[in-house]
Length: 330
Ligand SMILES: [Zn+2]
Ligand SMILES: [Zn+2]
Image (tube, rainbow, N blue to C red; front, side, top):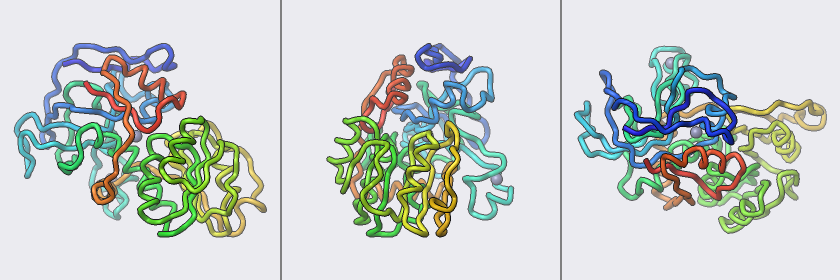
């Protein structure tokens, strides 16, 4: 099969992913073989490809928002031809303290799709059958792919921030994840304030119903109940913190930050403000979010790329050139 393989991480401009012919993967016990119909592109893939997350294998196929058709015999209720989604959390040990206490997102021995095991930038992939989610037929493959990380983890960010219906919520950065989160917030009748770089991202936020839109350094004109940051930048976290009312929460939706700058505790954190990180996702987040997505008719804005344009897709994510989400069609 054809696959995009990372052998040595490097700057995306140097095209570190190579398209190669590799053997078809063989499913192990408890796994299923999937024919990949679409695979979403996530900023985490960029951190893996550029080496900000340390390499775990000498050769890796990235990609962790996989829409696939079951292409062989399957255990449990999955049948050949069933369409399923695979996301970042590819498996857990099921036995550590976190797994036993409803925090499987924090498992001590997790499997991450497209990082600790091969992912979906390929014609076929294997996945643990108990970690795939059956996809509602209302969603086509292109629409479903960006929901599987950008969507689910954006949704978890709203939960981690403790968003309640009708609250004032700030979104700092407006890429694939935020453009889906805003639609959930609209359905919850929240007031949404968006600070982001890029005129076209600001325009998209405006067209999706943001109450106020500003540049990445602008503070919203009101005090926020909650803020979610999406940019891999510690400065953005401090800007978000400075926008909160007392008791407000910032949730950081980023697996990697450039650095965390010093900030003034007395002015910014005192008053029971909180900073929380969002790590991975649970299967319950996936199920709950996909149900919400169907209920509110969520339709991601998608730009498609062929498999051999995968480096270009990641470069476009890096430069914020995509409005909405990028999806690879292998
Ligand atoms: Zn565990
Ligand atoms: Zn992701």
